[in-house]
Length: 354
Ligand code: ATP
Image (cartoon, rainbow, N blue to C red; front, side, top):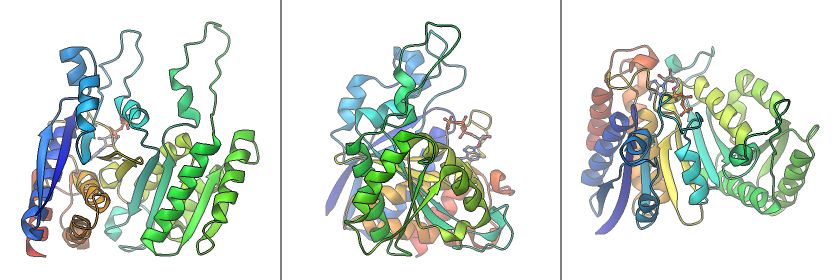
């Protein structure tokens, strides 16, 4: 029997609702596979934790979760809960930096033709992953002191050789793991920004280590166009932090929206699995949030936990595909009436019946 310990951080807004369904499906996998078991421990984080104790991400919690095999996170933050100086809290970004979770994996897959606003695409036609650099880039400017000069402000886009090499390697490794088109697309702005030209040079040198993988290079503006015009072309895209942030929302829009977009933030030691969406306060507590992004994030967690757990990842993706096929089972965001709990029940049942 292989035993895994998972830290569960439900967080704010719809976080607890969607995490509950993710855990339901995880338990279904545990029952189905046998031979693996999960011990779950819940921790309080986010805006509610800030209101309780003054810190959305208490240092004791960050230390404690390091002892777990993986972290499952819902969403953190609420628009009205801010630091005393008025800025919004971004504990999920803090967590990435504290645990050095440099590899932001955002898979995008179309599960049913009815989910996409594009014409002529069927289930499986859109299937790629964005590999977002998570620890530097333009986001590294976020902790800089507020400008004293009232006339201008500057943010620095920081790119290091170390950061660029490791994210490029992660992208090539992901292409090999997927074993599909074996294509890595670099997305940058090397025609304008010296930092991005440097990012490209490092990518080019890492690419030579992976002669079996095809490469191409697009500027971020062209990549945005091609993602909409021919999304079926892509396999693995690798990009800077801020570009990855923007493109992953655009890409989620191609396959049904934020409720369909899972993610994993992975480092060399730790990993956090969470839906790409935020706390969605506009629909919190209504029972209508789509839990599929979280359920698919649980699948990514099982992939990452290694050979004993990995069959559970495929089991979940197959179950999700079966439930969503034909568009009969749809949450509100996908144009249907299925509730959060019902969607979780359907997927758990499909896992059990697989
Ligand atoms: P953040 O800045 O933390 O990413 P945000 O405020 O930009 O958060 P989200 O919380 O992701 O955005 O919500 C964006 C929109 O998508 C909202 O209208 C929200 O209701 C919708 N949305 C997000 N997640 C889901 C979900 N799981 N199911 C249905 N709709 C969702």
